[in-house]
Length: 379
Image (cartoon, rainbow, N blue to C red):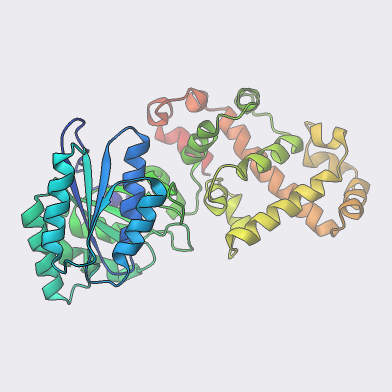
């Protein structure tokens, strides 16, 4: 049911290669709109598109400086003005300049506004009329909660919102408000922002989003991240996963890999039944510290313990091992026991993954794995 709510059944607009595609961003103040403009431009640049940014936000002090700084860092051409106060003129000039220079994706950032500010809505409409965008994107902050529906509806009533981007999904907000925004605009979510870094930006996939919304993890996203890493031992790990094998040493190695994968809490939240325990109420740094503490405990285990297929059962059979490891790592026996509990949960997910034949074929997982199989991983 939730999947139906988030998916309005409208095909998302996509840019056409070799022609000018104008995208206009609208949204509330503080929604992360300016940062998201750069993230989207960077996303397309990495895929081989010629992209540029236009700052038509003359309302917020420092808006052009922010876009200029972001764009320069990402090496993306930009246009704006410190002297012109009319955003419609800036937008028009910027779009004309980059169109003449053969840019394929031109992203126009507009002033953030509230639904009560009618003058700013008129300005937004004027920019839209002048630049004739192929797509208008409504940027929504995941943390604003119930207010998002009325705000989204107000934007939709003034301009033709064709897509939604949900930002700030790296915090405690799980993005339930996205449901209301989609319902209000009847427009598909196309991307989500998952952190502060320029590459903390990913294409929106309905089922993984709903899984995370319900606290069930995101196996598909996790495997995508593992494949992106192209780790040297990836093939060996995948062979083990196929057979449902997973030792304490494997978990140690995967903890090391998790640290390389990107936004830490985001990765942990993808693991069903695992991330919630480790990340609950913790900052990125605190979660990293917790993970390193678990690795310190494993550093005090013997090779035979790390490589045993019995895993946690070995310690249950011989409790003196727990005593020895706790002394060696300088932690309590309870903490060693908690590590073994986390391992048992992780290993259980791996065993389920091993029983799903299409999971590690590569390519589009939606074609390899059906919804019933994916649901098994999240049980």
